[in-house]
Amino acid sequence: MQISKNAVVTLEYTLKDNEGVVIDQSSGDEAFAFIHGIGGIIPGLENALEGKQVDDALSVTIEPEEAYGHRDDAMVAEVPVDRFEEAGEIQVGMQFQTAAEDGSARVVTVVKIADGMVTVDANHPLAGITLNFDVKVLGVREATAEELEHGHVHGPGGHHH
Image (cartoon, rainbow, N blue to C red; front, side, top):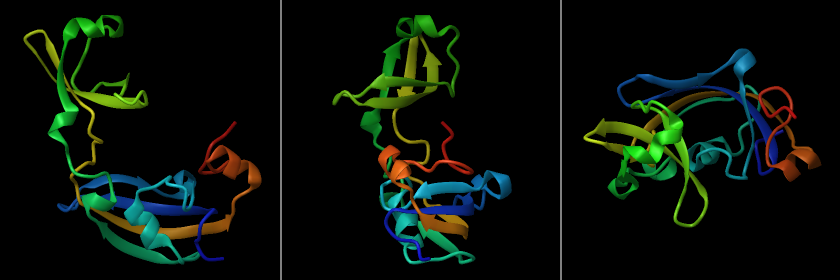
């Protein structure tokens, strides 16, 4: 079976930046599973996987436009430290969920603490980075009706209810 819309794809991957530093990887018992064509992975990787099948291996470079976008300085803000009173001791690298202007949830990362202010960044941590994937397709199958309804894979490599 070839990878196409609504197929469950299981794969191993290694993700590196342009300097060859490993950012993330998934293999063996930690293989990654997703439903193809519903926006569960970045567009550049999804496009590269279209039509592939079990045992196919590929290396693909994905520019920010087809990954997590470019960094947007407007998504960095300073917030008074007292807005974090309930969180305890704030440290650089901590992440918090907040409401975006449209009401959706947005994750922000603390990048600086100084002079009673906390600088938070709502950019995705991989925004602005060219991504280099080495991928091997381990499995391709049709998604079940329940998986399509829930929008995620069930079982190994996926969600467990």
